[in-house]
Picture 1 (tube, rainbow, N blue to C red):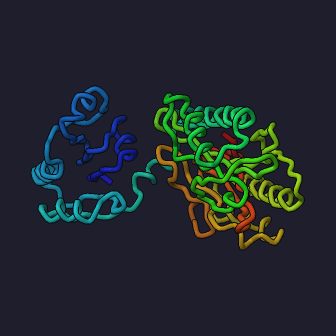
Picture 2 (cartoon, helix red, strand yellow):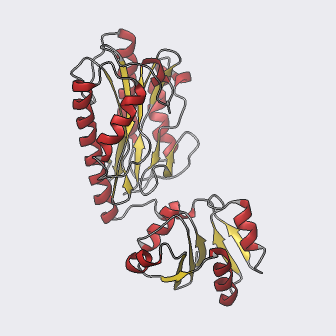
Picture 3 (cartoon, rainbow, N blue to C red):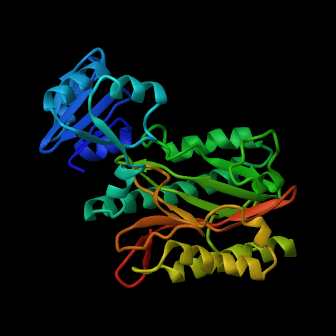
Length: 340
């Protein structure tokens, strides 16, 4: 893709090591342009690498001017980035063929460099440490608090008082609320013996981590993979999900289809009789975006390659009862996986 235009912050950051919330990035062969407004010019001039920084009040007008003067005939863009209004405003002003290519920036980023792997590995390490910190906090202060209170506690612990940004808003779900894969916090109170699901992650040097753990709150909770539950159904469901995760991880190696990784874990859950309660795909890529290529689903024909990074996160969700999800990030190695 010799000529292309970007406005997504993470896509732009990948190209030039800086982004902001008002920018247009254009690549025309060997020329690169970072267009932004006066609020960001100083920082852009300090941090943008490999591109000319251009200040403008009307970014689209400046972009149109650059494209008009370039005399190019075709420009690639990701239609998922653009509003209809912004696209029409820019494209109607130019005699250029705008060629849509959905997720093309994510596809460029699907194989992580050694530097990216090191950053993501550290993000995962910091995220795991934050889970341990949150567990200690729950043991000391969690009893009697509701999900809304614990949600903000989780934000504080994962951000480490503002040192890190969050990959996404954490999920802290008790008992039947854990049966909602993306549960919102409620007034439900945490009591001894409750089933608890926590899904959270933080960013390190812009790259995300993502992890989910479940446990029974007994005043001495930990988020280790091996868990014991007093209720036999809880234990059966948890053990089934853990077995499914292990099967999917075992299936990962270069050359396999993403759908085969999904199938390996899903077969375990279906055999145990819970197939109707695994309602999402097995995983997703993680990098600058919390959800990016590759997607590990039953429909994905993506061939897995070395140094892809994605989650493995099977789940079983029993409505009005409880839900279990176990999630880890993995890197594809030459012969299998590295669990980050």
